[in-house]
Length: 396
Length: 244
Image (cartoon, rainbow over all chains, first blue to last red; front, side, top):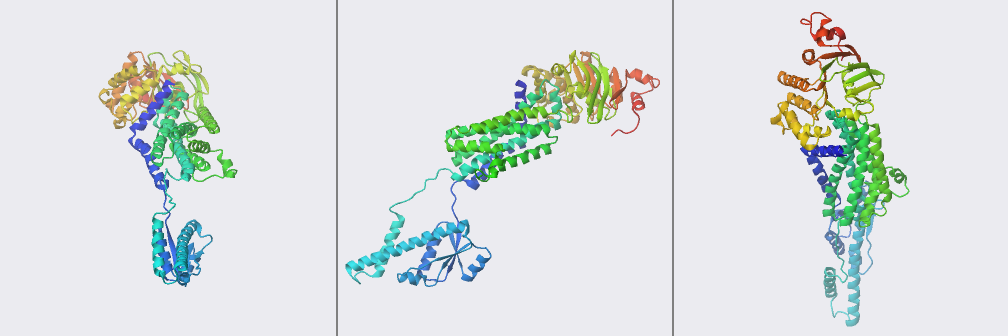
């Protein structure tokens, strides 16, 4: 055991001595974090361009367009009807707001005016959001007309005609509605805590476990590098047993993968506020066990690979397969074929365990199956890798 | 050291085919042969890296089959290719392999410094091996094999590709170690080197030992030992055709 630890310490020393490797090892989690932050961090503002065909060109259509333009993230592009039809035909656009001629006159005369959404299919996701925003603006205009109409009627009924001019009534109503908009009776404020729940539940565990799997490739190369350097045979002529060599390499691989992942998780903890202190510690424990399982698989690859390229490619292919099957980049539907295949992926169990830990605020209950699977992989990986290892290709 | 009827095959290829020889305590024994003769495979078996398909190996009274670990505790191996951690310093390499040979931290450091001094490298102890010349790396390669004070030293072409000064330094050190009682199994392609330092030599070809005696006796078989070289004997026995 002492010699296995010496192997581990030597690996760590070599890692530190190789400045390029060290910089890569520390920078990679920081860069990964920066990418995650750029992709998922904080709140996301919906931005879109509302395409409008204004055949009315009256006062109220102008008010509607101006109000739309004032919505944060929305810009306006005016089109002719011909342009709109042409672009919809070519699928250049999915949704256009059509304001018919006479829209303003109808409203001015107290009639009911209509707006039309010209859309391709269901308008697409952005189109539906945009349509919802337009409906909100139109609804607010509608409320303003309703209030102005009712106030006008009340004043006329109570005071008679021409006591207060219609213009004065409209101006006072508009002023009051503006005040109401600025200081609504029921105000809604937003308090932001961390990133979006989709990101926390779906992507954080997947990205973290995918990251741990990078250590699999490193451990896969451990024995090949030693063989290439010529030190493998020399080590095996000392008192060091192959079992101690493998265990030492295994521990070094866990340490390296674990350290890098803890850097990544700490940044996620500090900036995304994904974890509570307890769920952070519990997640780190899950990661430690998962790193051990990944390293054990890496040791099997290390035993069979004859060249660094072979070790790297087997490691990369295995990592990508496990990552995809583990549902890192997309949600896996329960009962689907993918879910059944995904049971063969180590990531599935690690992801489930981390999701459980995050959602429960740090409790490990419900993670038993994941730990049993990962523990089994550790034992099997170490035993198999030792059994199939040959110091000299073709030898015993 | 006794090797008896060693056999080793890789698939259909018989790398070692019935090799038997013994080395006396304190002897420098040369194992010569063209490329592919089976020298390295023989050393790999003797140094416990490869298990023979059949045959018996006894080193220091320990049988390879049942006491491989005991054998590893009394042997030192200087492989043909450099086996060093180039990113580490010379002293760190020495200490690491010393610890692997069973020394404690203090003894490993003391022996490392002594061996570096022996090789004329004590002033470069903290230098990174990657920055060493070829000759210095060869000397470090040999110095590492001495960590743990082995009783039997395997030297697989320890002087390949180095200048005459470094080669001479290695010769002198090997002869010095022999005087202290160390047993050496030495392989080389330099025949004058084997003639100079080996008490006995075995010439291998095709996985078999085809001749084994003192350099003097082998040369005597061809003519006057003063006029015949060991290389003449080698070429006479193994032929002049290229092997690789």
